[in-house]
Length: 116
Ligand SMILES: [Zn+2]
Ligand SMILES: [Zn+2]
Figure 1 (tube, rainbow, N blue to C red):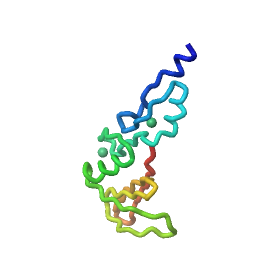
Figure 2: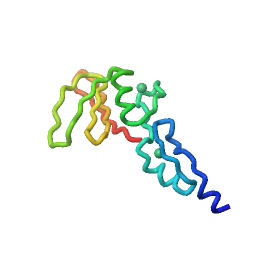
Figure 3: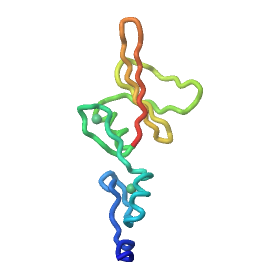
Figure 4: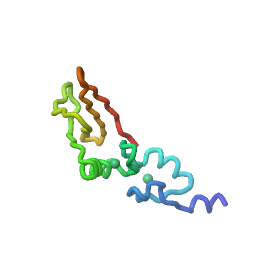
């Protein structure tokens, strides 16, 4: 039985998001914790899209027309801020969603880091 369990390979739960790993019962949990294809969910509450970071990036621009800016980590990050959803991504695929709301006397900005 032990032998059998070791030889049975199952696809990663993120196979539908592009993961091609085939894992034994023992490796599966471990892998899924660190799987690079773990989906991210679209932060728009009415939207059910989920996908890998790259797909989500495409989805933001093509599905919602949200402008995006690639940023580098540095002391000052400069980009144009306009009211609405704006989102930032870094080279190492960190996604940040900025929601800029213009209020009568101030500018309200909420920032959300998107991770699997
Ligand atoms: Zn995987
Ligand atoms: Zn969406």
